[in-house]
Length: 89
Image 1 (tube, rainbow, N blue to C red):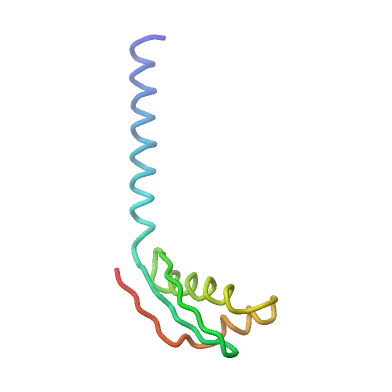
Image 2: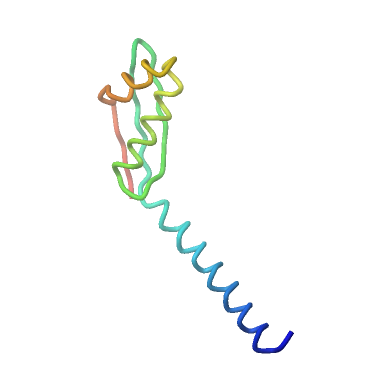
């Protein structure tokens, strides 16, 4: 393998690693804890997202998955207003 090829491969590897690090740090922009009460059960979950809305939706979906049973319950739960929402950047 020539020196030029080795340098090109090294440069590509460095660029890919840089992109992975940059992408992963951009993912954790918002952290939100959502607490929900549904049909006498309650749960709080925390999620990360690029936007506040995305983090809230993910936390709500995860909390509802813990306290609901079946698709109909899950949909009804996610449409219920949360008891509390606490987000930080």
